[in-house]
Length: 458
Image 1 (cartoon, rainbow, N blue to C red):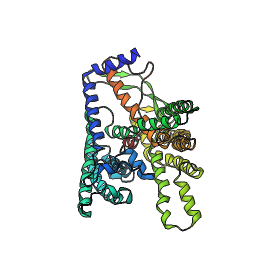
Image 2: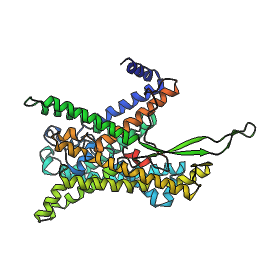
Image 3: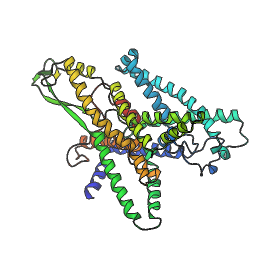
Image 4: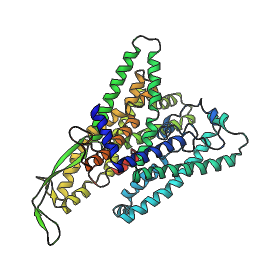
């Protein structure tokens, strides 16, 4: 305990780090307060009995920290900005002009501007759809009767668009002047905000009727901690490919010196796709439920209902297959072994026993394919764990933290933030946060291999 207190004192004694932490906390508090401010035309006192939506809307509500179900001014959260960012990153893969812009500083600034403009368009469309959702029977009692349909639509679209842009601005400010990745931190705070209520609800349910309820609750906590450890291993796991550097000339013309060849390694992530395969798989599982009302076949309707139940065998089986497939698909999109081999060749580095150029690219691609398979399987297991926990009697709120999108994002963002804090400690000649070794984030080798993952977990 004394060492922990000493670490906190060291962190607080660094002036720049202290200012960044305080700045981050203030903006996060502003975001959390905004999540409880209702939209114009909504009576917040009549929203208390509303339950959060399920399916894809449930994911959006989770990312928005519950603001979606509260009809808040931050109801759409930062998701439109993330959608626009992912679209621009994928466009860079298929459009050569955008790919060229991503490699230049001026081009990246233009892409950031295009992303913001696209965020406004995406938010306006999503806000219009949200207006239709608010006019459903679930929110009928909360709507102000003296608001016309047009005025309610106009005010909601304007306020939601402004709210999303404000959250986007706060995320960028946290990244520039705070600690950690701002967008990812805002998403993580929204997700973890539900954790205290979920664990209290689980404790209360297990204590009803006495018996061995407390023991079961303690076992669940032990399993929960084991799941977190497993997700950390999945997030941090790398395969190190040895790398040699040829003799290099370092320094200016007058003071140049020859440095003998050094050894290094390429860290290839076991799970380079991050949380994206789970998000894609959840979106795909939600699509069949859209067509439920158009089918009169009882067998088809029953199958669709099974796909919307995370405790059913069909749901977990198809969901796991989709996660594995999307892991390979997304890894292939963001990981470019040819470009990595070219970069190694330009830097006079090589893999021992492998010829530079095409042979190096094939070798890296083969290694990546091999380590992606276990990573995809473990990611699929992490994705279906919440459903298995619900099936074993864990409440739905607490079960959502047994893996899935929630904990993958939480673990990744916390590791990235701690890595940045540790860097400040080491720069100021303090000991790191760990007794041995150092905390590493989710940055991976390769061209843009970690960008999309960090955007969502971003």
